[in-house]
Length: 375
Image (cartoon, rainbow, N blue to C red; front, side):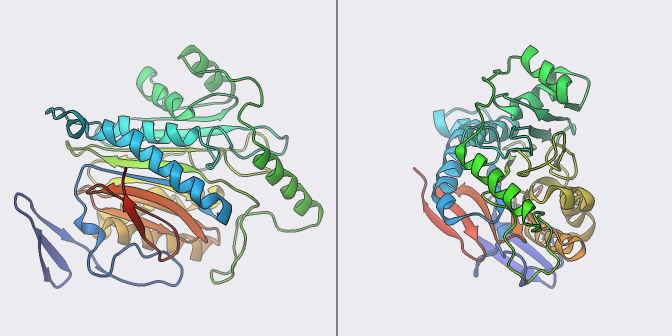
C-alpha cells in the first residue's frame, strides 16, 4: 500500500482501491484516553468487511480478563462467518452486517463474563432487567427493548421489534409479552442471576450503608477511581459488510443496584447505538447517565460528518470531551463509512477485539494492543 500525505489529507492507494480520507489530525496523544493508532500505521488502513466487538468499559478486574478475551474471540468466531460467508464456502454470496452483529452479541449474552443476559447486573431488588438495541445504516431501521426479565437473547427481541412491528422501542410488560409472542425463550425466574452478580450487589449495598459514593461519576480525570464492584461490562458489536452496509448491536444489564425500572443508554438511539451508512456505526459502554446526557454515539458520528475526522479521532475526541464536561467515564467502538475503525475510552479499562488477516487483535488496558493467531 502506498501512503501519500498532503497537509491534513492522506491518500491511500491500493491495487483496486483509491480513496481520499481527510481528517484534522492523523496522530495525536492524550493522557486520558486510549490511543488506538499503531506507531507506523493508522486505523485508516482498515477496509471492509469488518466486525469489531467490545465487552464493556470500567474497572475490569484481573480475574475477568481471560474470560472476556475468550468471550470476544467466540463472538467473532460466531459473527464473522455471517459477515463473510463467501470466505467460508467459496461462493459469491455476500454477508450481512446485521446478521453478524446480532450473532456476536448473542454469544456474549450467554457468557457470564459480560453484563448482558446471563451474568448481568442486579437491580436493588436483586433481579436482572436487561435492555438492548440494534440498528442498520441503510434505511436507518432500528429496534430497542428495555426492562426484559428472564428472557434469553434480548438482542434478538430488539431485532424482532425492528422487523416485525411498526415501532422502534418497546419496554416493560409490553416488551416481555412481545418477546414471548415472537419466539423468545422464557427462562425460569432467576436463571440469569450469577453468584458474582449477587456478590457485587452485596458489596454495593455495603458501600451505600457506609455512606460511600457508589456512582460511576468521576470529578477528576487523573484520579484513579473504582467505578463499581464487579461490573462485568456491557457488550456491543459494529460491522460493515461487502455492500457497505453498517450495523450496530448493543446489550446490557445496566448497573448494579439500580432502581427497578431504570433505563440506561444502551437502548437509546444516538446514545448507546447508532448506524448510518453515510457516516458510520457506534456502540458505546460506560456510565449510562453520562452517555445519555452527552449523546455519545451521535457526537462521534458528528465528528466524522462535520469535522472530517477518522473513526479513531472522532471516537477519541468525543469520549475525552464527555468525561471532561460531565465527569462520568465510558468508551466506544466505531467503524467509519470506508471501514476504518476507532476504539477509545476514558475508564480504566475496556475490552475490545477484531480480526484482520487471520490475526485476533484485542486489548483491555490503556495503550496495549495484543494479537495472536485467530483459530
